[in-house]
Length: 101
Image (cartoon, rainbow, N blue to C red; front, side, top):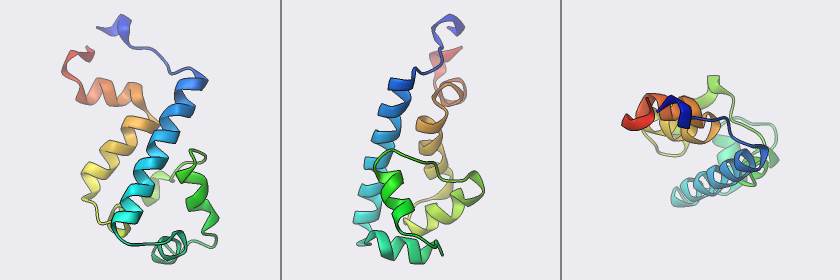
């Protein structure tokens, strides 16, 4: 119920970002891409941004979600849903978990 929904603690948020980073890395590797290759696909100036994301730091800008999905061979709706699970867990629960409200 609503009382069970809570804001993530800083520790939980850090853990969620780390888990997301592992997921992003697995998608990149499944596509056979290096960090540099993915950066080139995304027209990023620095491949180190990908390293930061994979290490649980930083966030993909929302306006680039679809580009990232395509670059990683993912269907955009499912990709964004998974990002939402980690970036906005409370919103994700409200939208997608039947017992959240």
